[in-house]
Amino acid sequence: MCWHKRGNSLLCNTTERNLNKLQRIQNTLARVTCQSPHSSSASSLRKSLHWLPVRQRVIYKTALITYKALKTGQPVYLRDLPHYHQPARTLRSSSQLLLYQPAARINFQSKAFSIAAPTAWNCLSSSTKSSTTITTFKAHLKTELFAAAYDSV
Image (tube, rainbow, N blue to C red):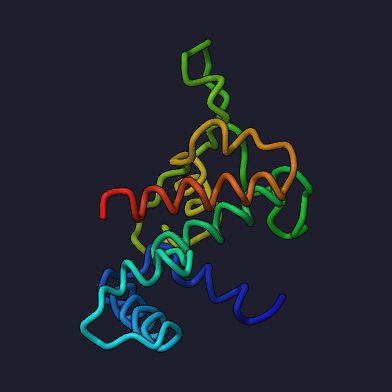
């Protein structure tokens, strides 16, 4: 696995300070790419470039790896970690394709894939989670995260 793919897992549940630093770098890159002055809105530039903000990008990568582990069993070392939630009785949430989310006893545990994956996955819409191909999953996922990032801006 390439370093940039492993690096995304390090950003799961990282501090706001670290995410803000990375967001400033991405904002600068958007301005350079668009050849815009420093006073221009980085958010509108990122939106025009169709770039997800750093926080949503971390969720995107985590959800994509989770989808691959659930649907294809790849990567092999992660395939047994995510489990669908099996309630003891029938609930309305039973049809929402939720993942079991183990409790994190210490803050450092929240970075583990077995905890970060269900956190990212369970926040997605049912239509995104029920995508039948990886191509449609990526499209729905990016659309959902893009809307969450920019519709309020």
